[in-house]
Length: 129
Image (tube, rainbow, N blue to C red; front, top):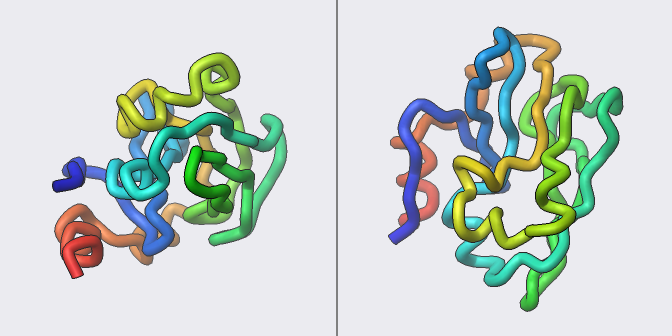
């Protein structure tokens, strides 16, 4: 069974947002369920800091042994950092999706957009269907 971390916000496309220590900035990554469905992650293509994205706009791709999938920006915002460790060790997405396997840090344009995302209970119900 996939882990659904409490206190995060989720999309139907299996991305999550997790608060950082900086107000208005969130870690973005894929969920435990998503990494499990993909299998062993071998490459992650991420944007550059300073790039901006609209809600659910593609911000990169993730390549696994089984498939290549698009990554979607959960809400509008600006990329403030990317996890460069994933260049050397993309498997962190598999082993620690909610921790060291984060993909980017996003400064959210409109905090009200966060309310449109699912909480852990709603996401858990989605993946159990």
